[in-house]
Length: 169
Length: 274
Image 1 (tube, chains in turn yellow, blue):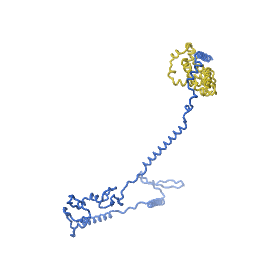
Image 2 (cartoon, chains in turn purple, green):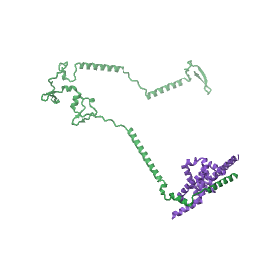
Image 3 (cartoon, rainbow over the protein chains, first blue to last red):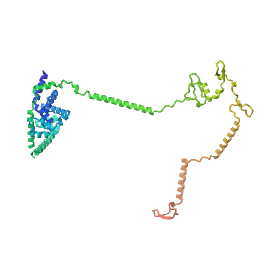
Image 4 (cartoon, chains in turn yellow, blue):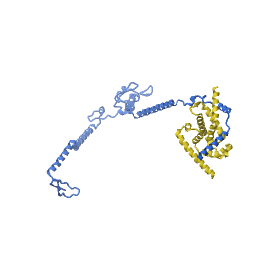
């Protein structure tokens, strides 16, 4: 009875934050949605395994993001060749309907130039995480997160500006 | 600001795409998690490392014991290598070595010291005597054992000094006084003359040596040296007292010294010869 209740609570929690989990998986799969779906299942399994260790001291979204992030890092290490050496053509073929979307391509190219840590920061920043929460997930100080986030924004703006200029020509 | 808006717009588009991606339903999620083993079911001892501190301390203790053992063994070997070796066993010449037969081998002059080995073999005294002195073997009386046909050596006590039937009597030398010299054990015909000549030569040599040896010169002792130095000092002082003029000898040029008048500084003048 208690197990079923726990399962129900866990499924409800996952359903609430499923899009966040999928975005993190998509970030680690270079916006390859098919691969992101597979990674999503892996992340859910990892979250279920560590569900008992969640004591509710932090926000649910922070815990979910932290677990998903570590799962993606481990999977990336394990299947390094499969994920990182995926060619651009392969990614384009697997992307869903909006593959021609220019904005998404720009974002993908920009994210490709970022380190995994910077990608995580970017997603969390865009998802509305506070600096303290980002620091909790990344294992850094809040001040360090603020400085790195500022540098990341400047870098992304520079990249986007360059790409738009290149696109205008 | 424009880039910021672009970034937000990009992410919004990205989120819209993510919203359109089909994800597992609640039932599918339940099936998925039911296939997975729960963390709570796993024993916690598997995750926790097995007493790392105790294991490390045991390892440390073993290492310490091994190092102590190594040091002790090296020290023991070094001590064995450097300790003084015991003197080799030398047979005591004065104490007789007992034999199993109960006989004692003495340091007999007839055998000689060189013939007595450090460790005596277990042999009979008579056998050693027979082996080392062949002339005695010749003199050992033997008799025919007619019954067995074998020559059996007679015991030494039974020999009376007489000749046996098959031996030739040695020619006995005659002394100057006409007696049989064979009765004198160390007599040789010209012994006395030779001895006298030798003694005379020795005496003459000794006398000649005594004449040629010079009396030893007295070695310079500390006392003598002191006396010499004192004498030299007094001689110099006397020279200074007698002559008020310093006459240095110009040994380099070899010319004769000439007088030079030099002021002394107190209004007087001194004549210096150089």
